[in-house]
Image (cartoon, rainbow, N blue to C red):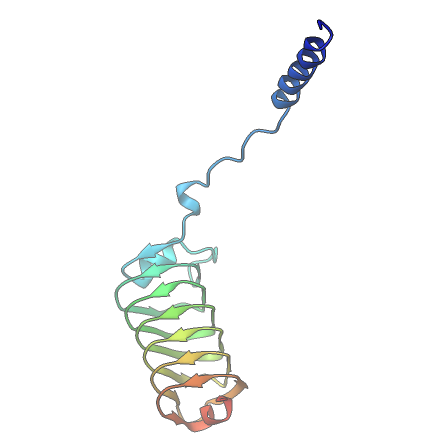
Length: 171
């Protein structure tokens, strides 16, 4: 009967030894790694991952007020939730992907723009720019392309009216 406790003792010692060799838990993310939040575009872009003063790259940002991105060469909104109207004006390159807007989104690029996989609760207005690509967006309001905008893409659902070359990207 004394043989039974020894194997248990050996297993207990091995269990403690193996547990002591387990890797440490990963450290919790730092506060600086949190998604940017703010009430104006300048504050949000200050926490941008773009690395340059004229580049604003926001990943999973949250904003509750109207935002006006003006004076940036590049603006990229990747994910995120925006409760007020958002205007992006004068950038050479604009990319919006996987973002949610409760209100209007205005895109006015001097170069190209891409808006894809996003939800716009109001109107999506596309101005300026030589070309815009619109892919699989849901627009509750109007989809408006100004004269001269060359829109390409497909799979966009629009609840309101569609104008200009935006008519060819619906459905």
